[in-house]
Image 1: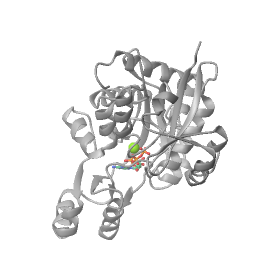
Image 2: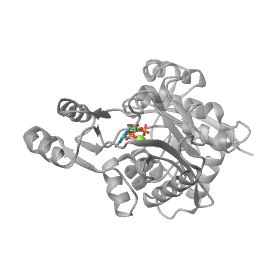
Image 3: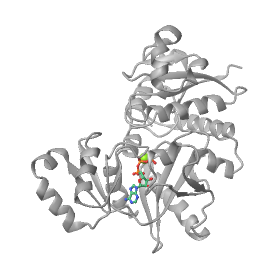
Image 4: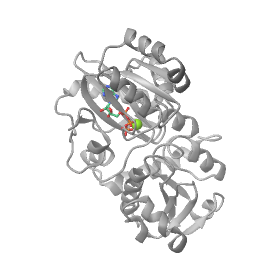
Length: 351
Ligand SMILES: Nc1ncnc2c1ncn2[C@@H]1O[C@H](COP(=O)(O)OP(=O)(O)OP(=O)(O)O)[C@@H](O)[C@H]1O
Ligand SMILES: [Mg+2]
């Protein structure tokens, strides 16, 4: 029997391409060779696709890989992808990979893939729009204001006064469509507010200014099986920095994570799972997702960051929560692929 050719798509055009490389190679390494025939498909910084030999995936950076592509890899066209793989395991993070762009291409090519379709992927990437939708559905989200670049440049005093009227410091500033805490700042006064907004505007044309949530941070992986999204065990995060920064996320030994949570009582953890599944459904997520938020001191559950995909490095929430449910990385990866195939088999039109 021919094995399913699984293309692990990694690298990409976003600020998170190095994170993607780490996720993708770990997925590639853990794909069950009895069931699947893995292929590493590297997207370079210009969006071009290359089938790369396994020797290249252990390179330290995407730049190292890029330098060796011409000699050691095989360039393929978008249309050529269909000849190479039967299924796409999307290990790209951020813009162009997680936000519906790649999903649209895969729909046109008729290749099934992990994660949700175009619309839900785009929603999963946009923190402003997802807050509007979650709020309308009665799901708790932080208070926030969206600041447009042109308003910030032309009417700065007005923007500042409006923010001061509505909020007290500290605040969070963030680009609405990034991940891995890129461009996120905790701001404690007017000077750092200006820095925070300027920093976020390096990444997008708008900035989300949010109230600071003083609570316990959590992350909840959702896995869809037989059409039913189910939450794995919740993880509690204790960052080493003032908040869960890029370094806290990816530097070895930086922050503590507890699965199941240590400071969130079991009934609250159960409520978090329910709310995470609700957010997953409301945004139209499919296949799997990761819903992040805060358990507040007054018992409220607020969702800050619903993600339509998740990092898959060895110590990621994804594998930590899978382990808690007794699943080896190869097992949960296999289940994710099988479930995604069912979802794509049942869809009418694009997912
Ligand atoms: N309103 C807030 N109140 C308190 N902390 C916050 C708030 N918003 C963000 N943070 C902190 O900043 C971190 C990064 O923010 P956020 O989750 O919005 O970004 P992200 O880049 O999408 O993250 P991810 O890599 O999980 O997708 C959070 O993990 C949290 O520690
Ligand atoms: Mg995110």
